[in-house]
Length: 424
Image 1 (cartoon, rainbow, N blue to C red):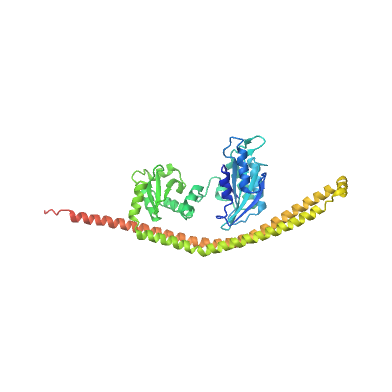
Image 2: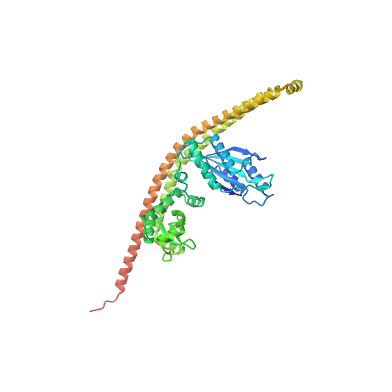
């Protein structure tokens, strides 16, 4: 599993994010350990309250557990990864919450620990946690027989398509896959060896080079959104400067916006809006299928849960009825019979809990197969739309260059008409 962790605060915001049913098909709280509250919001607020006795600002440690794309992890696998992570980080026994998310045919989990040691009344230090998680992630891939990603196989050969949360959020607001945006910038970078070449390569993809206020080189799309070149190419600022030189001869962000507005005609902007609207409509039937599938899957899981809860109550009562009361119960305590019965009940309860867990896993695996089939249809449409957006960007770039050339020709003709004729 890919493990990504961070120290953080914001108990309410984190609980809202983890329980966000709008962006996830299914949410399941696998474990709440060491809290008084039996809901996630209350549990994380307990962690915040306890931290008030210390000077710690980042009182939680949040970890995401991401299995490979083609693997459906079980509850036991998530629990095993969480247990191994907390042991490696030095968080053993700390209050923790585990939440499982399902989205777009993928299943992953989030673990949140309290960093506050209530006995010592101080925060637990987590030195080199990124290195420890990287090593554990590699061990998990090897233990499960999964193919190692390049980043874990070589420790540093990071995939060029990895992106930060900030990049993801910026791209999400515009309705584009950030990998698509990042590919466009990286492909343009690989094709060029100078500033003018990079500028032309970007324009072929619908982005326009400009001088940023503080970030050196930036690019803008036809809607005026700004992208830092170093961030979206995955390079350092000095590498960008070494290849592109100084940005001083480029227009500022404000000037670039004016240039783009003057170049992109209302008709072109209308084409862009038409394609955006049609792309959104194309996904409507699949969104309906997604909503219907999610409702059906949730109902099926609820039926299983209700059945398991009812059976658990019946089995618990049967185990309780084995324990005698009154004088016979006192006799059982004296002879050790009660202790033997209680141990038997504990073993049986554990077997029943494992049985229920396996039932949930089987149901989820079957549902995930249906969800992945639907996601493959969604991805196919998204790929077609990506190609169409690329063709549109190239058409817009051609039209803008043509319009710029036409304006230049018009200025030349106008100058020639105004120039006085001098006889030899």
